[in-house]
Image: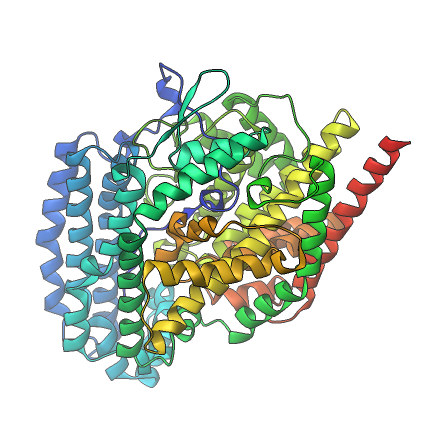
Length: 623
């Protein structure tokens, strides 16, 4: 019943539009690192709280068998579990953030494992609650809610528990499954260590003599290099090194897929897709409509690739040509400039938004610069309800870094707005909703930069960046979703998954999306190993929600532009809703129906409009 999982939202830049990472300045000003003492003053204080909580969890047993006796008994048990979760998440956040500062530090890894074990202990101590609620039944539970106003914060959670009764096992079975929560996460943990620490990535010597280690950070930097030869060298070095580990990584991913399929069967779901959609009570039409509409729109994606080839002056576009910017922008965006631009763009959302975001940016909520051993990519962790969100960035002083900062602050602002009106019990929010503010504020930033461009060339840059964002978020993430589902469906059919087979499956869908058979983008077989670079495949069908979120965010942005303050209020009210209702219903309340084709078709219309504008500028430039 309590919220057991940390609320962490990972920026899609980890897989879609990776920032051009560089090394951090030699001496990092502490104001550009997060202040974990706001969570705990010392490691010793953290450990003391962890140990104390482990002793408290056992007290949950005193409520067992009593929930149906009275509404007060039910409230006392739920409040106890909620309080334990609230305090435990603070402990978990501290260990998780500290580990991500440098994944090479063994002591930090061990503390994170202890925090995960603590969360597992909480799961075990409270695993009996949902089965007991289901046994009591909906009629009596509803009566308890009507009789006891203190149960109102738990209304939605109780409804969700009762709704999923057929997929909740008996108390003993739920208790048994809870013992395995930490081992179930092992594939993701193993993959993370491999990716960020253990693989000896090669180095590439650039023409100026600089040596760049072609790890995930170096690859993200080099794949956007204007020199086509360097891009190809980076691709070949990076994916050749990954290929050496294909058998091992294939087994790691296969173990994750097998585990999740087994859990789906244990909970009486017909498929992994059914289980994941049921988590948030999403109509199957949402997923199927997304995939259908994106596939219908592949000619628009291919139009973009042809425009890219034209602007780069390339006759035959290769896969290593899809990342360099269409127009070179000779500008640097340091952290302070990035903060100012983000705040200026967010004026569209009102002074209350800007003042809250400025306060957070001026506080030590962010770990800004890349460094060796630090977790790659970007994320926002909003689980410490009584403190504030924390943001991990890898800022490289380019516009992609500005956009990433805006994206993660979209998550953070969602957290802050939710806490304005929601208690801890409903302040969390579904992933299906979570990526809406992050993607929509990126759109707001891109529009602001385009409108304030000093020259047609600069405007082309921002338009092209927005176009690439649509490719990376809408098309690429849906491609990932199709691929991920194909893995689950293969296992559900009883098929084996080796690293080689996974690469074959990925290559087939990669070529279809990129029009390889139609001569749009040529893709070397080596690049079929790209799936190995995507940590999101360990997050259980997370990725399709980037595409649905961009779709919904685009629809909400259009309402802001057309309706003014009414549209802004509608947008903020969605953010303030937390998990007070199911995400599909929350979006319908905001007048966006994700089970219909219209919102998706609007994204295609926007993408074509951007290309129309860019081609008009290019044609004018030729005259």
